[in-house]
Image 1: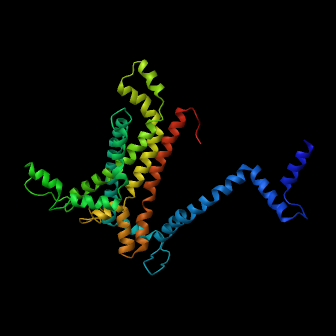
Image 2 (image 1 turned 180 degrees about the vertical axis):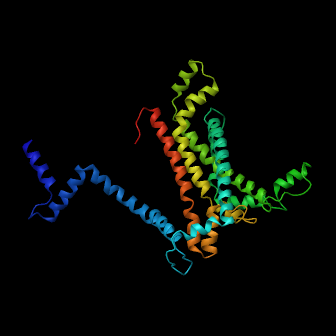
Length: 327
């Protein structure tokens, strides 16, 4: 016992004068093995460096550019919040905010409703369940640009399959101008986003449903609960943290969507489908005004933080259900 204590004391004191390099190395290795805090720090260091290099630095650079009059080929000077003040009087910017909110809210609500319905359906014992799950995932695995090209054809003013079918049934006299009319273009892009996003919500909620213990349903059924009460008092509470995380990611993906809109409409017609992300790209890269484009991107941060807080409160509710305290 005394020998062990002596070795531990020697290791805790580190290398002594006269010790060799191997002894110092062994001492450091022993220290890391015995100190979980230091070991965890070294394991997290690569991931932290990666996040700082590829996430924190671009975010900080974007915020800095939003406070300058930088343009392509010119570093610019600090002008404070002048870019944001200018955006307050920009009608196109406010139109992009409206479009982004409409696009995010409508698409997220429909993706959640359809995704939850599909998850509940696929959680039951139905024939060809594995095959149907694979089919449901197809829109998610198809590249966004390829989806956009397919919808481009579906929405074409002359060769649209929807117009062709409706015209064949005698419901319309002329083709629908899906992408040439402002409101038609808005609903068309929202529908395309819903089609792409439903698989992510459905499969994730299905994974959550399969973690709910069947004994909870059996106990509730013995107590006389009907199907609605089973969902309201068993399924929904158990899915709350999953819903919080899924909807947070769904809202973030939808709010920052760029590829689908840019490939389908490029923000047109007359800026009717411009989201904040596409407008930022247009002003910063195509227009050359990096400061102005960065200001539009920076203006998205409060909305994104709100979505993250939504997820945090959802997870806190789960802790209350389990009798745990707040962090």
